[in-house]
View 1 (cartoon, rainbow, N blue to C red):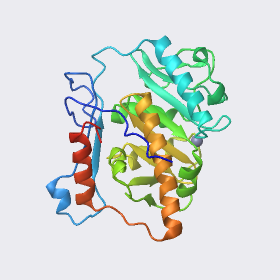
View 2: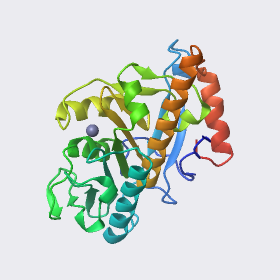
View 3: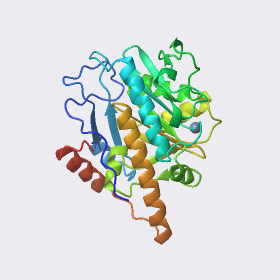
Length: 272
Ligand SMILES: [Zn+2]
């Protein structure tokens, strides 16, 4: 299996996370690994901050029909790849009018564009026949808190296997710079609850993906495709970690190595 391509190639301005109204000159998200001298000197060898900032919705997004078709296609692809099975997993993306989110009770592999409801940022239904995913709080908090434009939640098998065992997925590959270095594991709470959503939102701060203990994955990005690419990267790294751990304790990249890798990826236009 080859390494997946780094997600996206963001360019342009670099607003800080949560500054959701800061204008962005070229309508691209800027992802960068920010490791401050303060953090380097703090003695915390694991801590790094990746900021995946999304500009305000001052510029146009694709229309609802196009976004719904993209979401349905993404659901089919992820089902074919084995990242989601049955009715597990859910997707969402930001639209000018609100958030499109996959409906409850519909297998992503059979998701049709016209089935996808539109809700506002507080979860009130704007348009649609089917109820939104039971993990709607998990999704909406990512838009409100981090300015996400695409969010993917899965029960991808190797990621979940690790999330049943480890407290974090260490940074064992330079491509993990795109995920914010190591991947945190949010504590377990009952699915669909605000407690679970809060735990994941807290855990993912400074990262673009998180594992959910004994449950699944969450990834976000500048659009749905980026969130999906990060989910694939996470599953690939989880598999890599498993293979490595069978052989022996995997070596973890140092903070300096992570920072250099992130800088080099950004310099080469991979956007880390
Ligand atoms: Zn789930």
